[in-house]
Length: 80
Image (tube, rainbow, N blue to C red):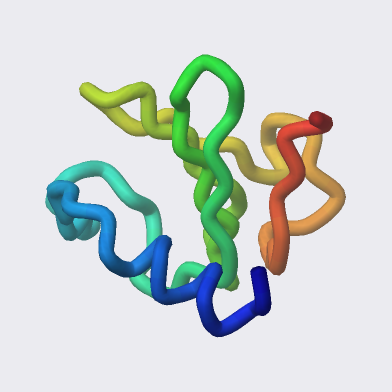
């Protein structure tokens, strides 16, 4: 299967899209990367506000106060 076919197949899947904002608990609107871990949690790397983890109900925020070396995060890895 070539890359174009693989992309088309992924785009043809039906699902539900939801937009999250700071009103929902996301700490910033400039998100650089999103990853999903094996438990289904979504991890958001924000440009100036650290990392947000969404469990499906609420956001938890991780910043330099929690041990990050900086709040400018460009990518998150689930370690898998």
